[in-house]
Length: 309
Image: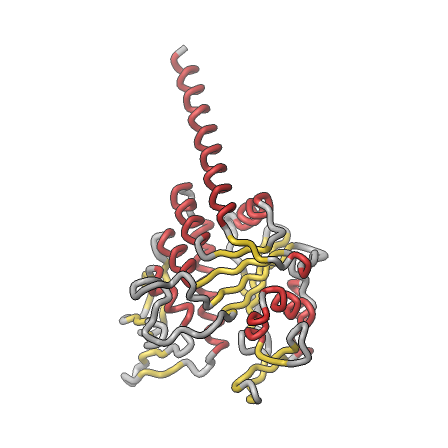
């Protein structure tokens, strides 16, 4: 009967579409660069912890117009610009931000420096530093550079960030002319995430730089990631998701132990949920041989850290 032939045809098309999507996703996954950190990874007693590092690598930036290009000199080497722990457990996600200027003992050395300096010794040293100092087990490691941030945002068709005031950062390239919800493309979202000299145009008509410095930057990064995760969760189109995966894969690095099944498990675990940003780690401002640093108030920090242990 005709309706049976139609149903069979639809079923075949669905199978082909699913298989095609699966094979395309696998091909993207196989292109992702691996980082040899598996010996430093440990298993959480509950849930799964992903150490997510935003790198300031300019390896994929070639010319003006590329995401991440600015007129300022690019920093030498490569440093961890953003450090976060994503904790998945029981259908919920929590996100802990670690300030890059936090002054901590660096694993494998006899010294104490800003935690972003640990990355200069390689991802393994950063994983070991987070595990040893914070007593946080790390199951998986993921690293993404600036270019991938922009590619992901553009693949999603932009994101909306609410600005209480017009804002700018002449070094990162951020320029927002009006307060309220603003649609950002990849380049402007990147400038927002990278901003370290964030200024707002207040009622007095003057530009005021954010006095909270790195801590304010963390709040902006959390707002950005929460918005991105929310838009990913709301996206139903497989074509949009495929573009997003392709956009972020170009600058993505993952631990050498992560399998395609692990990646699918992460994607499945994140569907329909938006990570809850945990309270900022309590810190004190200080200055020493490393310049302006943050000192963790360890006793006060334990209840926050316990949520991802």
